Length: 444
Ligand code: PMP
Image 1 (cartoon, rainbow, N blue to C red):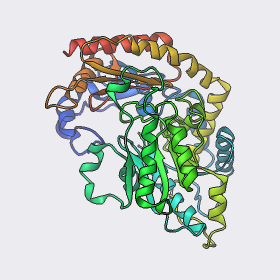
Image 2 (image 1 turned 120 degrees about the horizontal axis):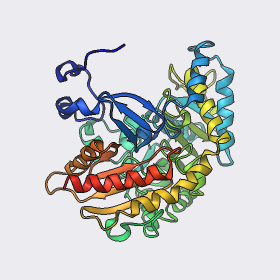
Image 3 (image 1 turned 90 degrees about the horizontal axis):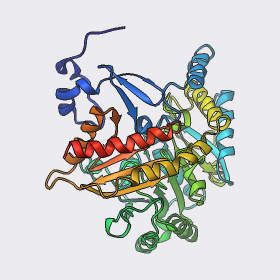
């Protein structure tokens, strides 16, 4: 249905997430999306925008992929909703098996949720339940990382380490959480290509936190293998291995939050395989069904499930779940997405694009205002020198200049993040980088 263009006052009942509402509502006209096809959005004004972040890291296969759309349409004719509590639906069981088959050895079960935030909170609760079932209910502490992003639930917010997301709600942090130092260091690793070689020792801070609280109190460590939302902060060579060793030494569970890195962004099913480090749990969302219908999940080692099943509670072994856990539409979309990933050789395609993206973004080195360029898998970030006293403004200017030139970049702080669709062409990646250069110049 065609409606008259909205004016700012009629827009105002909508409280936008993670947005500068007042600014948007004054300047929205260029930013109203109308539709999307493949790697492009079209705005209400008819402008085509290349989707430099694949939605919010979720639409790797491009928008409205026909096989995924068909699967959703067909599902609507069969089962719209089916309770997942004490009842089953075969496609959901099959999807869990397919995901386990893609995971590193040792993984055995998948618990479905609807978002990355729910996946993280579920994983944290699983860690508590696991230790309790094994007679170690005193393991209640969690360790996250500075600059980490683990969604917006109380658990994820508390283990997360992005200051802006924490300060407004500081009163609501769950107790017993520490943070490892982040690995972002412009002196030591600026302009590294792929994994920096400096910084593995920062993982040793985990030893200090364990010694401080005693290992018997620590339930789990949670990290994004590659920090996405903080601006593609790539783990130093050996860093994740070191975390794994320390967790093993003290019986602490290691959780990888793979909401961004799962299902193709690293040219592999999971970052765990890409970085060759196997955690005990993997949280995922986004790419599992190409962002089409909300779906997330927690992939656990079989031993964690087994311990919970043998625990003291019977009738229900894990008092947790969501009305929409494993929603049939989301599951149908996920099956189609996994079909496309495997049948169309998408991981190989990503691996071919990775060096193209790397050389495209690093060609901006030397441009005034750029203080760092990072890349890993099909993800990259360009960090800009902040305008003194006005953090975030420089990146906003570049974002606006990019929009005028037909590129939808994502900015966070003074970083411009890029996670282009897996189905981008090499030319599109080069264009993305050269428009970024122009946008930086235009807005100077
Ligand atoms: N964890 C990570 C690593 C994420 O990148 C995100 C989303 N950007 C989340 C959790 C939260 O996911 P959602 O927005 O679906 O709740």
